[in-house]
Image (cartoon, rainbow, N blue to C red; front, side):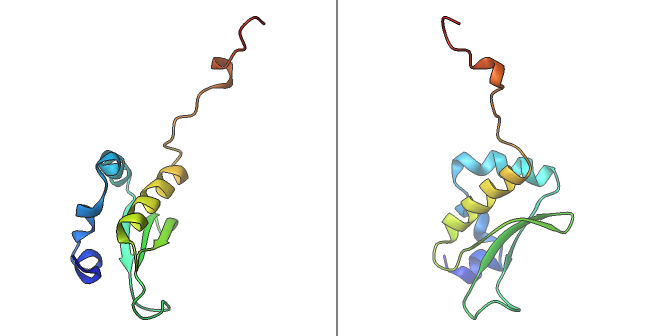
Length: 98
């Protein structure tokens, strides 16, 4: 699969790792848009993968050499921006014997 197929023809979804597919679906259900950009102010041959919500950039990563890595990084970045990671409450960490 070449970068043109991945970026322009939507084949990037096949590169989403199994562990992130449900998260991708949840983000898209929240209105997050994932996109590739390869023109404009970018150097020739550069493919930038990104995520935005309501016109605000949540995450982006250069996918020119490793598109699968860029896709994973952007999904994780969007999850962070949307506070999708569960963090334990401080009260659940009690020191034994106190």
